[in-house]
Image (cartoon, rainbow over all chains, first blue to last red; front, side, top):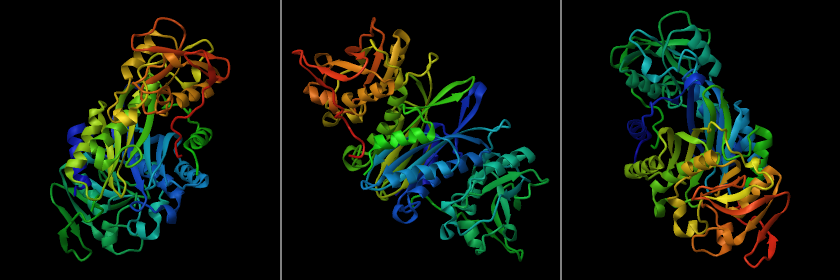
Length: 275
Length: 275
């Protein structure tokens, strides 16, 4: 067994990737191209015969849009590689591609195959903000930790099939705040925050009482994942109305502060790929 | 059942895609970005436990490189979305990504998941030649039809796992000839030539005796597919040594001329996706 985290590290070492949500590619005078690719697999990320093909198309592209949002970029184009079941109907195929279109990014190309396990792989290309892309590695000691919306219960509620990538929120944050780092919450707050801490070589104190939740217990807001809200760090100051301060960046360690003042280590218990 | 050809038409109508091998995307002063995505699925395009994971990585990227070559572009970056079997070892995962790297394009990002059917989806990004991309739709009456190498028997011989995308050959053709249309031979000469004829609204006379073959009967060279040589049309003139003239573009119809002078319609009998 091999975990995705190990592989991502390995890819990073071997392929000069950044370890960020998107590849950051220099296109000279045009700007900085952002590129990301994400899978939605039957039985893993959605269920073909229960959720329907449109969810595959939508989620494959929306996951990529969320990656672009995590770097405060502007999505430009999407491609979809789809694998349909051998007995797929034309209606199913159209639903898949219409789902992808509903994510709201021009679909400019794709590939269709037929196989035993349906999937959709979305590739989204965008352009970085003129202020540059926001990376995972930019968090500074003293930064506030902020989140763009309530967390938890995404899989149980079905929100993971219909989430709206926080593209505008990301751009507003980047334009009105002094952002340090940003990531989209796919693996769960406790895990994705550790991604920022590791990339930025910093620590955190997370204020449990401040974490906005979808009516779920704290641990679900921390660990459920697939929220697709944004987690950012910013210099202290005025925040957009949609952003909630949930903690502060420290020099080292990852501490969760409970409402009664009790402290415990913040452990990454979110989605671990390949478990 | 739905055929990929129908879907490709549908995508073209709905999504303003070109129907060409790559999406053609305007990046202003930097140039024209070419983007393509291709699947390699266990049991469909290769066999995980027979061919090994490296073939999946290699072929997923090499198929994209061949698409870039078909438009005479220069590959720049690649992304790989991989689905590994649940019992995958780290060695298998590394072999997959090393296979992708061996295709020769910088791997800048990716996504790894685990599921019941292994696959690799490669996305390749490139930049169009300064003379512009070569499309399927540019064939002109009187153009010679040329091919970059021998055809047939790719699946039987295993060449489909190790082919070298004709990137340099494409650029040399574009620089030294007056190209009309170009495509890479993935579905088979008889089918891919029809793609050019339909996109360009022209016909052809194909000279059976002139088609270079890998020691296979004529019908295999016409229909086998997965050759990944280039099929181009060009104004008559001097050709690079690797290029063989195999026919001429006419106003309408698709005719195969046998060595004895007998003529018959050229029927697309190559790979039909989803059959």
